[in-house]
Length: 240
Ligand code: ADP
Ligand code: MG
Image 1 (spheres, rainbow, N blue to C red):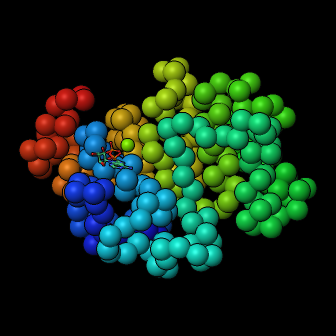
Image 2 (cartoon, protein in one colour):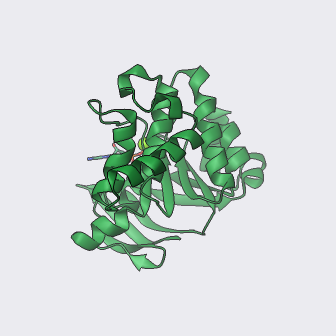
């Protein structure tokens, strides 16, 4: 579903992604781990071309992601993204937040978009909040709306960049549970998280990044009990 082939990226003199090769199968859940500054967010952002790349290519469902233009907008809709900050439109209701994209990009009518949106809001457990404004919801509820909004575009893959890092501790689990059920339904997911319990439980594969390089990839069991590289051991020693 996602193929990253020989991707390099610099920020000025900083070589932030070094020859990244990564394949994510349909329905696979990849957890990206690595020290702060290792390039996890940059990798996520390059996968839907929020960032340009120097060279290499990125394919979504077998199609090369072009650098710009109308084709990019279409393919980018295949990639849903959920960030640390919820990024909801503050001056729009929850329902409008979820229907806006499908009406604009997928060309749905208001009533079609609203019917779909209510299904999605129900799925993430916030359908009773549909007519409220974002600020009236808790952080955990807002993040679940952000997930519903991304799903409303019918993405083929979902990227999550530290989706629970900005939440109060008691709200972390409700968001993780939503992500676990999405994974169980077969969504292809790439997740950056510091929630190691979730990583163990939900990951099909752990991808460990350091200094812009993929250092190792393995099953969660293998990664957590027997990391191969010194840098992964060092990383786990600091967080576990
Ligand atoms: P992570 O998400 O793993 O913490 P990032 O992808 O955010 O890492 O950052 C990787 C490196 O790139 C860091 O050294 C960071 O300072 C640098 N960086 C990130 N974004 C920019 C930017 N827009 N301009 C310049 N440097 C950046
Ligand atoms: Mg980051």
